Length: 106
Image (cartoon, rainbow, N blue to C red; front, side, top):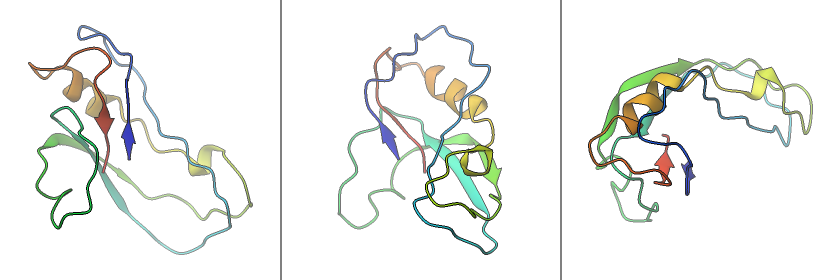
């Protein structure tokens, strides 16, 4: 997932950061996700083989085991990631980071 023109200054202290999803349909079943950020400026995703796996990722990661999404079109706590502030902090602490850079999470 890529966000363009993220307006966070280089010297910011990140205290909270989340990605809020909206469940178009209900979904059940166990899933565990490992979320990382791209540590360089996040260029657009391509369709070439290994485009995502060849990118430099943050060392910081967050595990998310979302609960079942049981309500159509819901955008509540169940559809929100855990706090991703440590990942965002690592990205903006990179030497080449500039305000309005793009950010990607995988």
